[in-house]
Amino acid sequence: MEDLPTAIEVEITAAYEAYSYYFFVFIVLIAVWEIASRLYRREISWRYVMDSISSIATLPAIAGMSYVMTLIGIGSVFSLAYVIHENYAIYQLGWSWWNAALVLLVADFWYYWEHRAFHRINCMWATHTVHHSSDYINIPMAYRFGPLDSFFSSAIHLPLALFFEPTLLGMAIIADQIYQAWIHTDRIKKMPRWFEAVMNTPSHHRVHHGRNPQYIDKNYAGILIIWDKMFGTFEPEQEAVHYGITKPLKYQDPVTVLFHGFWRFLLKLTTARSVKEVLYCFIMPPGWQTQTEIERHVALEGLPVVSQQAEEKLASAS
Image 1 (cartoon, rainbow, N blue to C red):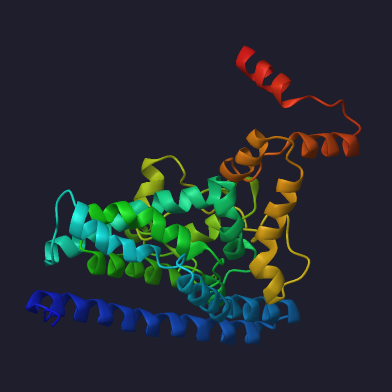
Image 2: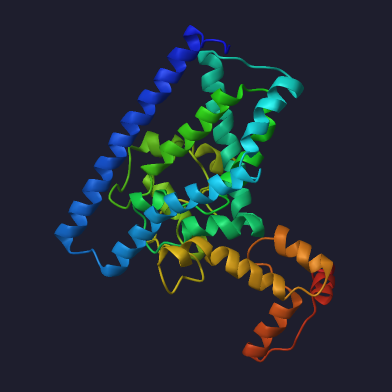
């Protein structure tokens, strides 16, 4: 017989459910506002509609893929958190209001580095690029997830199970994600200055979705923007943001949106000439090129071919 939840577990769970419910209502209101204002200003095009449909379509597609992955033992990574917590925890921080607040703060800090890894490690970018592939920013694209986003996220959060109760940890991770839905909008321009200084806001997050050179790989925060300010990745919104990825998608149908990152990643793998290059295709930043890609590029530009070894020597000499 399973142990009944304690009074504090019931209280914290109820608070989390209330938080989820009221944020859901708030997000729906913003979505209605977006649609109404765009209709009024005649800003809705067929591409915008298709883009939004593709964003929403990723949810059932990923749910189905996650179910299949769970059946074959890949999609249940977070279930390991219970094994880790019960058998290998360094210190078990149980249920309390203090620990609930602490785990939310830690999960948000952890999310910053997780999000940064999604942008700087190519095999992770192959799935996360789905979220950035929209030419717009709106509430539907807040739910535009890549096929392996949850897999990588669960794996990255496993070390926190060495301290925090997995159910409490899971609620903190979801709470962090729920907060981020409302910041995917261009209808809210600026929040009060004190709020902008500490919290992640639509203005800060629009920067994150920009492909303007000064906006790329900036503002990774989940709830608190202070992490970006602490670790040198903060950029304020100044010039108009151009949304999307540096190589925009020609089509916005759900299949293209969901799998374009994997297709581009596989194409890169086919150009690798060595085991080292194959490894680098996985772990290097998205802009890294194999020697074959470099040669193809310089051939198009009419430039002399410079090997990676020569580039490394020039870099070390300088």
